[in-house]
Amino acid sequence: MDLVRDFSDKLVLDRNGREIGRVDRVLLDMSTSPPRVVGFEIGPAVLAARLSPLLGRWVAGLERALGIDRERPVRITVPEIIDRSPHIRVNRLFADTPADLVENQIRRRLPRWPGAA
Amino acid sequence: MSAIFDLVLGIVTSIGGFVEAGSISTAAQAGSEFGFQLLWAIAIATLMLAMLVEMSGRLSAVSKRSIAAAVRERFGIKFQVIPFTAELVIDTLLLAAEIGGAAIALKLLSGVHWQWWVIPLGAMAWAILWWCGFGVVEYGIGLLGLVTLSFVYSAWRLQPATKSLAASLVPSLPQHDPVRYAFLAVSIVGATVSPYLLNFYSSGTLEERMAEEELWVNRATSYLGMCFGGVVSMGVLVTSAMVLQRQHIIPDSYEQAALMFVPVFHDWAVPLFAAALGIGCFGAAVELALNAGYVCAQVFGWSWGANRPRRDAARFSAAFTLVLATALVVGVLGFDPLRLTLLSVALTVAIMPFVVLPFLVLMNDPQYVKKHGSGPIGNVLLAVLTVLGGLLAVVVVPLELFGG
Image (cartoon, rainbow over all chains, first blue to last red; front, side):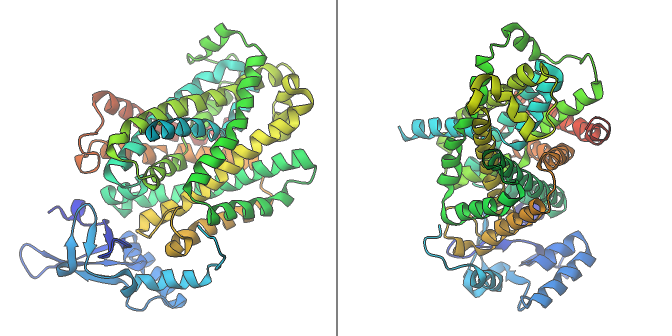
């Protein structure tokens, strides 16, 4: 497996096919040789940290300020992966992940007008 | 039968949706200052766009990924942060310019200052995005946009010399203002090859669930639709050349550009120009806002889709709402839509290498396009486009400063 090509930045779906996010950071066990992939994380703070550690800290602070930092980033371990192609499908439900927290917060603020597409 | 219907509808709506603020303003200025001489720039830009649009559709139909998603997966966030940020900035500026263009069209009809129309138009665009599915956005507005064919009718009625038109399809040096000429040529390319069009088209391919077997529909729609659309842009340039240049008018506002319709449409000139400008700009505004939602959702892996219940894709809905709201603030503050258009066109050219380069890699990666990769000719053309994009990106800032 090519870590960058087949894993990093891939779309992650829950077991029903609903989008959870993308692989924003790959977790490696460096105690083995060669290092072993043990899982990955999803979340804006870890994604921002890949661009710059300072930006990562800033985004993490923003998450705290907005009250959406609970159980973030979403951490998924290798045994939870059901399928890797074309997208990474995991044995979780979107509604049970912290990613749903943000979606829910925005949903609560969206108007409940009838007939919305 | 359904595929034929999709093809015809796709071509017709591509024609109706081709012309917007950027293409009208650059073609009108080019025609008024250099006659037919810059027709070649529209022809080349249209072919570039058709080629990239076809590749976007092919990539999406085969890989089931949009351009933004494929770039994130293949190149990673460290590369994508540049085109992503640039696309959001350009989308917002262009969105403000398109809403401004539509507002000026309403001003031409009503006499009420254009800034008063910005908020109602923004609300209307948001309502369409909130209540309507992809079909209405793509086909409904595209069909209304057929009013822009009035530019082609006008050019035809003015009876331009066929020989001059044909000669202008070959690049030539100007007899005056070479820097301005080069600036307008580059601006025409920037106004035509908008990155939002590529991602919007590839997202549309996914929204409509185009199958691999329907790639011929994608090819025909891209090339025929874009090429006929390019003819509408040429209609703007020819009409401007035959009317405005002869009267020594260089349009620095849409109100002046409207004069180009007077010899053909007489009393109907202003209403018809307003309808063409208004529908063209408003349609582009709706597509731009939707595309901003698409890009954000696809880069970050959120639920998205114009055919999904909005509350089921809350972050996607919030993204297009936020970008639309930001563009409205820019519009209400009174930034000149024409200047905003030219600024976003220059930015588009500046990021062109980041838009074109990924195609060279993605269209040769079997993981994405399977057996439908680019052949040797396609690769040579893509390489030429990448080099051309790089050159244009280098010259656009000096040209903007000295020729803009």
